[in-house]
Length: 144
Image (tube, rainbow, N blue to C red; front, side):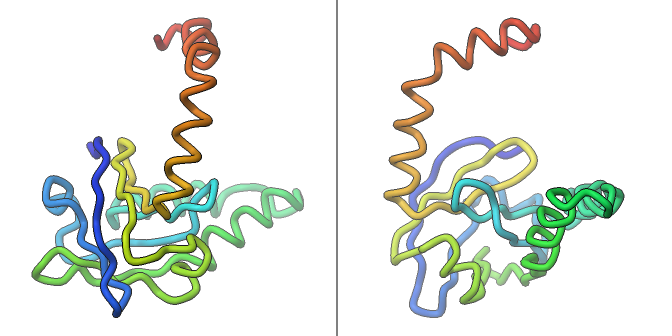
């Protein structure tokens, strides 16, 4: 399980270290793809395979589903995790997430997210404003 928020630098070759606490789940490979809200999603291979299977079974006849699957799967890439626990972010994903020399790496249960620092600050500020309302909705579902 991935939890927590970490500040990491991105080197000139577009490599970023996976937090040490997360590395055991990745072994030698990771899958990176476009995330939601402008971040990148990073998955261990086994988790990605389960998600990709679910996405692949969505109805092709529904345009929105087709578009979502197309973006998620076509933009995914398998990357090596080097001996220092770093992964290489391809140019097209780096551009999508607008990553600079510093990024925020967050753990969100079954995936890791990589964020542009300013986007992350904005995202968390927005969530902070809505957290009471979100807690009420979760309470209605019996979760919180």
